[in-house]
Amino acid sequence: MKTTYMPLVVALIVLFTGCGGTDETEEKAVPVASIEIRTAEITRKIMVDARLEGMEEAVIYAAMPGIIEGVLVREGDTVIQGQQLVQLDSDQQTSAATAAASAAVSAARANADNAATNLERLSMLFEAGSVSEQQYDAASVGATAAAAAVNRAYAGYTQARALSDRSYIEAPFDGVVGRIWARTGNSAMGQPLISIVNPSGVKAHVYVSENHIHELSAGLPAVITLSSLGGTSYPGVVSAVSSVVDPVSGLVPVEIQFEDSHGLIRPGMTGRITIEVETKEALVIPESALLRTVEGNQVAIVVNGMAELRGIETGIFSEGMVEVISGLSTGDSLIVRGQSRVADGSEVVLVSE
Image (cartoon, rainbow, N blue to C red; front, side, top):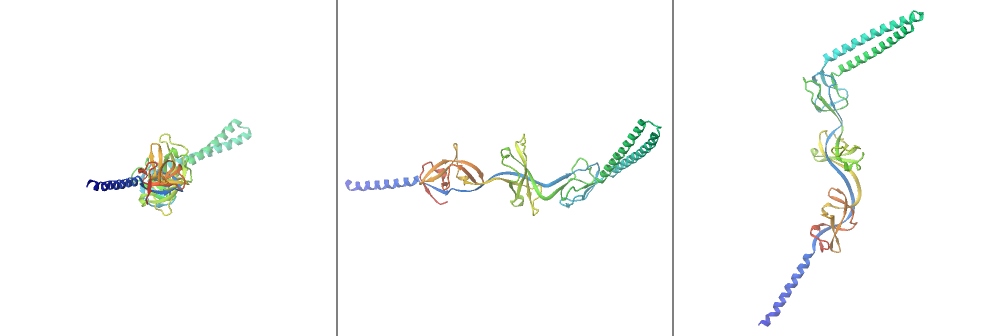
């Protein structure tokens, strides 16, 4: 009986051993997904948050003391250059100043007339030899000085009249009333009264790291994305880049202008600005394919059914893609899923993405 069952037991042991060996071989192949590496455009970008300003914006103060008698516009009103915005009750001061200046002009003219008459009289006496040349010269100098005094007095009068005209605050250019601080009955001195904004466009003043100073220049394209307008993006252009780095912050001031033909953008809105520094054709891979190690960035590629780890030099990082400067070639099969589970030389089996 024993000799009858032994061959059967041995056969079963061999069968199960053979099956186990097959499973171990299959477990060695790591399932991965790969893509063929190709070249594509990639753009180096600088992103910064900013608050928009009017392209032309003025905060207006009173040029002379006075009480605010009336505010003639409302926030959001469209105004033209020279339009009266705020009326000041400064008549008493300006009238007194104008009267004093007018009196000064009259006195200067009377003095100049007297000096001219005296010079004419001494001129005749000098020709007759009745006065000395020194006396005649003194009279001539006095007449000239008196005439100059008239001019100065008239300039003072003109200035006083101009101040009188400033009892109204006027719009310095065509635009839209932004903010109004003026309140009827308050003093006009020492505080802003009203702001005017030119709505033809907007701009932003941003500050970027000094590391970008040699990458930036006027004319570079930019885009602002405004969450208040549903994430809509508007194109713009870098209009100015400071050549000076702020010594305290280490940042570089940059001005960017945006056009809005539909009039939807408003000064004061905030958004994210993207400055497109450089666009080029390069070898590009997904950033998610990178293996970050202490030795640097690596990737895994498939070579003859085996995983091969390669160190790479990277360039531009943009929107989930990475420029590869060295370490890979066009046509390489890059592992984009399962790369963290392979080692150099691991057998892999390709599966669909």
